[in-house]
Picture 1 (cartoon, rainbow, N blue to C red):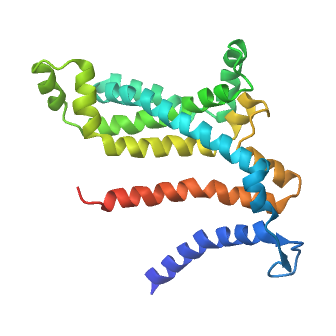
Picture 2 (picture 1 turned 180 degrees about the horizontal axis):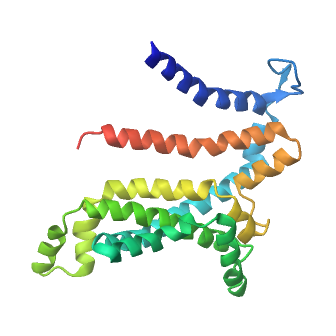
Picture 3 (picture 1 turned 135 degrees about the vertical axis):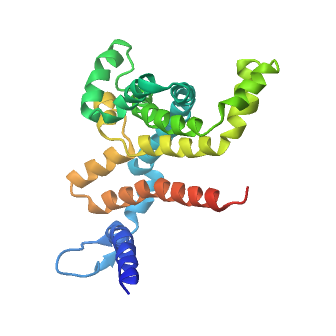
Amino acid sequence: MGRRVTLAALVISAVAPLMLLGLWSVGDRWFFPALIPPTFTTDSWRAMLTGQLGAAAVVSGVVALATAVLSCALAMPIGHAVARLSGWRRHMASALAFLPVAAPPIALGLGLQYTFVALDVSGTIVGVIAAHVVPATGFLAIYFSGVFTALDPRIEDEARSLGATPIQVWTRITIPIVRRHIGDALALGFLVSWAQVPLTLVIGGGIVRTLPLAVYDYLRAGETRYAATGALLLTVPPILALLAARRERVAPL
């Protein structure tokens, strides 16, 4: 009985906020103490296709996708190198890789802002992507260090002893072995960027309007329908990532 009650409580805690956001997104003139909206409208959902909300979602998707690809490409060799170290060198390298993750996003953004202003990429999508890549690479470097730690290095050594070049070892041995983990890393890098607010606000300077910033602006303006619709859109990629990860785990080898 206790197990069933706990499971029911978990389901309610996960579903109830989404149901409430769904009602807010279509509710019109919904005020206390009414339990349900007196009237319904789809204005906020139409704005997702034709208005600023949809444009912000597209910008977030582009930024998150580019961040995922770039951070994965950077983190793989870093994680591979960390996994091949031992002793204090490995601990030091892991700490340095994790530093962008442990640092407060505001402090990290202010530290990057001077460099990005000098490079003339502040306030641009390129600058926001570059800023998101920094913490995403830290996350994925730690992830890949665990992946490559579990990989037997003798497999790569054997390929090199047979005359394979470093590029051939990566493309024909290492990457095919960890291809499933690469998919998980891409999803993780996407999610790190998808909900990023401080770095986007500091580096984007309010010019690059992503979905989290749009939700925040609508909430401050009292546009609860648009804020709720944007919040629901923010939950879509994490849910899809969880479903994909579960399907990948239960798929036969």
